[in-house]
Image (cartoon, rainbow, N blue to C red; front, side, top):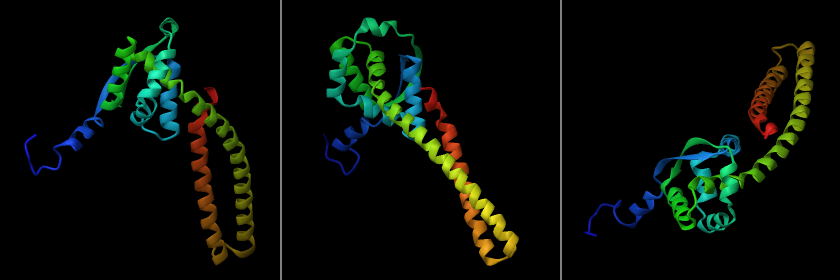
Length: 191
């Protein structure tokens, strides 16, 4: 390689190649597609990062490939879906696919199954969050009632009531945000 002052040339440049984004289309079960979307959206993880995490480990992918039964896989109803993956993840998938003469779709389908334990744990946490939310909402309503009582006793312009109003407004906003989060998390209930 010719000597140059350009800091982007050399080994560091090759490391960047693995981080390139590429589009890949797979035929996956609806459950696998839903799992990917649910984990990405609910846990706030980009799909590309999720794929990197579940597929990039070559040893784990190799072990997984040994357990896949293609006849069973071919019985699964699947549909096409395009995802953005890193070049490194695509290369790992392709290498194992070729080594085992197996479709990349099967490797992705069974890799995604690893997410089911994460989803089930989140589903249990969602149940607990809903219980805690009900308690939170009850306390919020009690706080609002206390605020109205304070206004009746001291008047809206009283410094105590003005500060109390700020606390009630913040509690209202937080309660609404938690409600929206739980609404968005309802997809866990049907998984």
